[in-house]
Length: 144
Image (cartoon, rainbow, N blue to C red; front, side, top):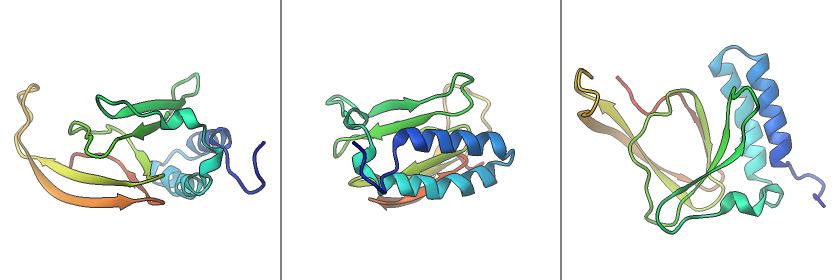
């Protein structure tokens, strides 16, 4: 049974769905959803244990929710200490929160003209440590 004051993953998914459909502007969607994610982070007991299932060989990306029209997705990433993700671009807006531990986030800029789809020349432009309880929004990992 859920304790009073807890915010469930299913309620978060319903609230995100409402925001995504109500606000056509990405900035407004992110502004509306950020406090909801922070509320979810504070309600750890309401998150299903299987959402935190790690993998020994690499980071795990656990799908939590996607509506039938695939308008958005809620994914929980789980890493053991030292595990990493490849450099990537979210290609769209993202809201990221840290439930436990810390995440080291590096942002890169592409320095070539993009003419070779198999090779990209990049340079690191910043790095930060995101700690438990942190949440932030992002539009893209690449900065042209």
